[in-house]
Image 1 (tube, rainbow, N blue to C red):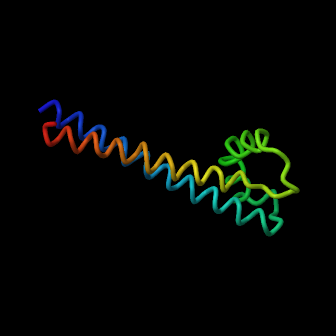
Image 2 (tube, rainbow, N blue to C red):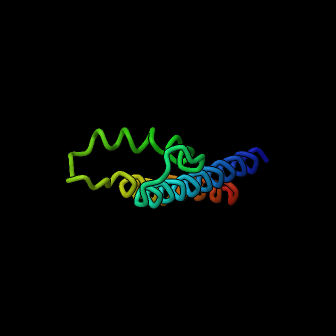
Length: 103
């Protein structure tokens, strides 16, 4: 019985993590698209996108070499999210499934 409860908790954590990573990926995509059109910095949507993504993108930009004004940090973060979703989330789902099966 406890294995089923633990499996359900792991499954729920995996599902929430998957959804959160998916939402964050779309927020980063929105930020990248908005940056192409010279947005109004006082617009609440632009400010939200910037506040949510800048902590991650800003750190990554500081680590990357200058690439002629091209910001590849959103692409790298989206790729990292993809890797985490494919590896960590899938692994958590597999662990939960195996726990439910008794092995």
